[in-house]
Image 1: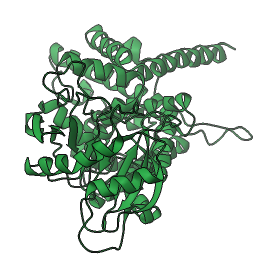
Image 2: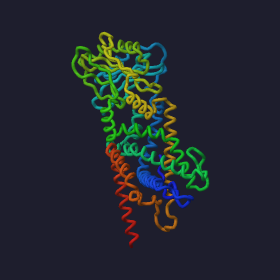
Image 3: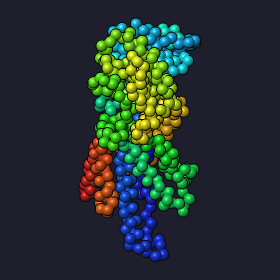
Image 4: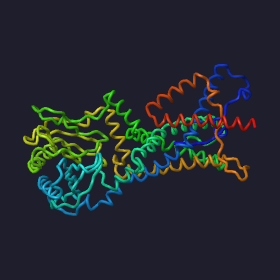
Length: 494
């Protein structure tokens, strides 16, 4: 991600025909002119987006660095709920459920997440109508003693506790609700645009100055001048972190309000949605219980028509059947709220767990009524799931989190260096006046051949329609650029 505010000095210098012994053919001159015009367009776009969008990206990088480490922070701040020092054989799930329902007898039981390893706690999960979307109430049970350790609100498909949820919401909307989501959508939508524009500009710069032994793609910084050195590190660090930035931008857009809705529609049209097992028992009517997608949370459930104790006694059978059918990772077993619906056991997102198998089980008979293996997911659904797990810092555990932390720190340096270059380009003789850095040369649109301009504008229109937080700021940049031009002409005629 780069935010170079460079003028002619930062653009790849055009090769003048006068420097050659022979004038280039007309076709080659036309291609060079179109290429230079396209570069000027990118440079202008890179400048405006860098100056005005970079603050959003800067905030996203700071909150993202904190978000990357939130799973580890959660394991420390909420250790009393997540871990137990008890040793010995675990009680049955029905006994643990009984202990949990004794704590919250007023709430309907909707799911159970058994302890996966020694020292882990079991979550007895309830629907709570007083909570918000994707929030549930969980009672944490010591599986060895079946004693409650406390209860807490958990959020989303990963079951985040309040510490991680607070950081998550800070990164997502700055705790400003829907208004705050505009910030994160602008950052996610523009990150890939600025990054790829910077990549093209740097590639052209390196190729044009290769004979001058300038810094290459991943080489040492240019020490000749402070600004050149800053530009070099600005670009090189951006290239180092570019692949991860593109992944974070893509996955971040799937969570956004407007672009996210379009992504969901596109995936549905292409049959790339996350599949789910059918939870309706044979011979029953009614819609199947969804097993949940990659972004799902779980709201409150309607009270069950059957006594909770009866269903709790069946969870042990469902758990054994799930293990016997190859579900070896951390599980969550949903307890059906209605008769004629199967229990659904599915693997959860946890560090190092890349597969999410699920089965539907008739609790009364122990018969598997439907199975969904991760290997049967569409490739696009798998890639989406992996990308989201990586974005959340859950794919490779602490290593994943440290990598994201390093990427966010690198992004911070890129943004700061971009503003530093802009500051260094300010006029130095404007005594007593606040001077800002110079923008790239004007006239890029007027000088761009139609063969370049039309596809560029068409691509911008498509991107702006698909991701409105690209289109609206882009229109704002254009209006601002026109106003700046009119102001400059007026000063020139005075």
